[in-house]
Length: 574
Image (cartoon, rainbow, N blue to C red; front, side, top):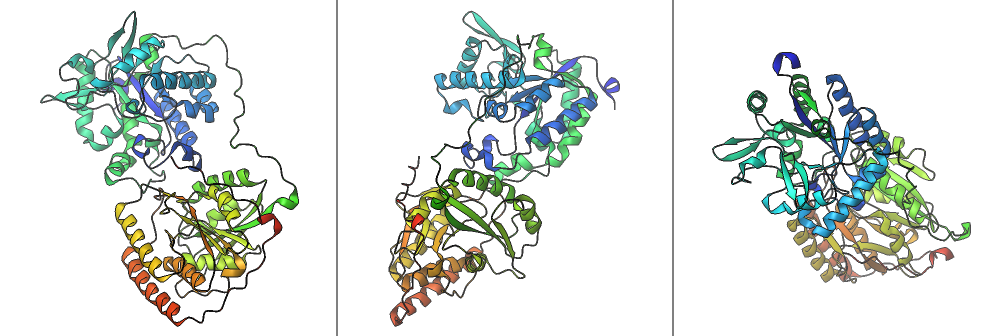
């Protein structure tokens, strides 16, 4: 059905949220804004996919954009404007106003507007909240928007019984704030038995039966004098996007259910009805007096005093990998930042051990890291487990200081710069400890915390070192002390076994209070019940070994002089 055959010649309003798959408010608890740079960005690809769809259907839209996106990708906004679309504000970061005071909200509006105008060359006249629609308790924000000179807002979501006593708020209306006014353009919803059900797009398109929404929109087009307000997110045109595995069941349903149906659904609506931007509908002029000055270059890391080549310490970093194709772009972005931040003190040599992955991990490693200086790649012909991969890396390393990190970055690799100096003379192993009194655990399930802490109590009864954590893979090793140690179990259990055997051999182990967060991409490879049984068996073997005694003492290899530097205090956790 073509637009001419299926609908009248009236125009409706099309609004699009320009955000990446990891910006969603549903993931704010899981993904900190300071970690956004680690994720593989798909924003440019999805935006161009959206622009091509709009061009093919001959439509114009309002793009609600984060100020952060404007600062990071100004060329993307310039492309949107060149295609004839409007840029409006979604705040600077992806935040709800429920966590902001009126003053903080006003500051956020100002910062976002400045960034968006710099990047787009348009006057920013409209706003939509990034996370959670406005309710009746949030209307104070409209006063601040009007005072700052915004011409319209589109943040009200008439859902359920919200605004039941003010049914006129379902449609476009003027909000007065003293001597100033602004238009409020709510997303479209229909009434059913006193309840408001949105039919505006986005999640509602994916959750509700398509025939039901299509019929409601057709009735709106025929009989409602207010324009229909539709919205979607550019990531909704990307069914192949990486999935945030740490999200709850409800979050995954809201975000990913029926994602594959969105491209066809949107094309159907855009081919059936005529749409325009909100500024175009209201007759607003978005022109600025002149093009903005070029953006200044933003530093990505604090500059440090340069060091002479003799003071730069070589360190091998082992990265065990097993079916990690999805995670590797996230890892690459993280390690790029680590290298830049530590280059004046450490020459990091990465040793990737592919533990017989069955996906594209091996090819992806070479594609992402093949041109990096100091990178090597090893591959197991059979799966040996994470401890086996670390053992392979330790045997192949040609530096005395060796670190191991988790491929999924559940421990932040930036903390290596505080852990390496702790490998002082007489120390054989530095291990990250989220259960330390100064450590931190973020978003890890309660059952896993209980299991880990219970195991730690049992290990403290058996071993000399009374640590808070015995099972972390995030470590710094004195290679000469640990390579001679043979472990029976090469999987997760081998991590604790190596530490236990080092302890009984008289090795010295230091804990570093670290932060552990839940894995956000991909799935954990640990088998819980088998791991519990394995730890109980290992505890019995270590206890028997301690009772028997007769363990040969360690022969430590001296560290290079450059390694003997005072440790940097760990950052305070907030």
